[in-house]
Length: 288
Image (tube, rainbow, N blue to C red):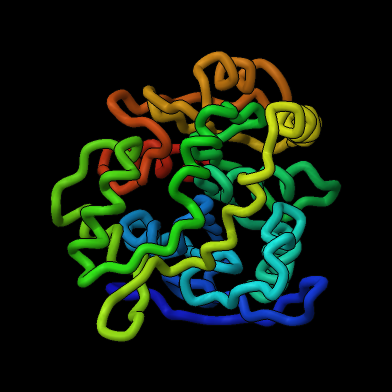
């Protein structure tokens, strides 16, 4: 399958109804489903290489979380928070129509999966957390807040890709071709120029974050992690500034006792484009 199908569903927020877009790879009648959810400022086409590789075995669902990509923007930016994202994903899973799914989440997408996996009668069968855990380094959140929420315009996709590369050094080494492929879906036309695909207001929640609030959220996330009872794989960029080695090791000792795999020379977060990264994901999923 060379290209995914773009589908949409209706979901509810306190402001009313909105459309959530998702990209579907593989046979629509395949009961084996993998949901791949992106990070804060990214979108569902991030997983094209991985999804194409797995689409002969899985029906792969890659949503654009609300406020990003082909999904609607919310009327009130205060709703760009984990509870809204979880609610939207519950609606998505109802649309997919299977009792169980495997879940791969990068950064924010991992936190959404963690929240769902911690719930009683969760539909998540196997969980992959890509460079995220209950303890998120405050300095990394400040770094991300420094560029998320800006609304730059670019003359073309190549100029935009160069900008994204400058703020995404943690993604690790990529060829120019790989980086351009990762960047194409990150832009939308804006007159005779192009802009980033997301609502600039998605970063407002980070702007008011304090170390004290971050610590309170961390306690809630650890409680959720300790409630997870499914096989869990934790991927970590060896140079990640968001997920420390100490937190990752703690995650192997409590809750679901995650299996840890680190990628050297990569920070936050592995893109799962490189063959050796994809192979780690495949081996974990193939055990199920």
